[in-house]
Length: 413
Image (cartoon, rainbow, N blue to C red):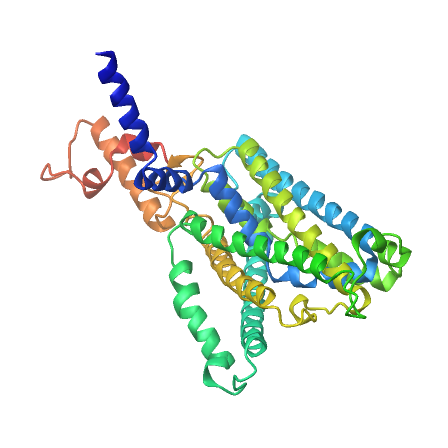
């Protein structure tokens, strides 16, 4: 009997080590439940890391390595504080009666209807402008990267024209992803975007250490220890104009606030504590990416660094060009998040199918119809109190009794 059990255990261990079992185990760990901490982190990081990362090395050259790192940390702290304020205001509004789950609802509680409408359209215009800027970045980077990879490519080729690139990206990426019902549906595309951001970060570091101290190149960068002995590299030019250029770039690199409340409402168990944890993890990841790209991108070219990271002379290294294509994909996958946030704000938060973890099937009923339903329910209740059942004359039930249970509808008043 003991020998039989030992043989069974041995066969079981062999089966668990089979390729199919290993693959099943790997894929099971890759499953990301919608509304989970991981899903929310991926979405928030993707909506934060965008094309602004290309300007970070230039911003560092205007302020110096140490001041730039301090500014990045300061901008990260400011972004986290803004997330905390949003969640705190939403929580306080719930305690005072009602919920404020969007920017305009918070604005309405603070400044009334006019301030609500103003905030709503400011957000929509901001998201629309950001989307247009990202589309311009895509249409600019793709032709430049293709031409850099192959000198035989005709710059006037139809597939390098802006109209074709934008049409292709909108038709095959933006529209299918932007029409998803919930932002949670983009959690796997967010992983792809984060992968390419981390790839570009890694390539930036690797390229620096490969290029530094190259005796055959007079323009090779100084090695790490030697660079930090140069006060101009460490502390920068320290001019007002330099800081005036650096601060806005660092601040806008953490623009994720329009997506905070939509992500929060789509969490499976939404609470301020869980969302703050998402914010901490997301901002930490973004800060690591920003510090690495800004520091090593700047140390590689110092005073010769370009305003656009991809315009720097990386000697047409294909891995850097691949990073450029990856950034294009990352930016393209970020645009649907802006579309969802804009739709969320226009609809007043009705795009989410859940509110505070409870299914809300009546959250998308138009207000006139909702009012009519509640009036009909009141009429039904009054008839029942008077001893009547149905439609006054013929005893048939009213239409609202077929559609809604009065006891259920009363819970949503």
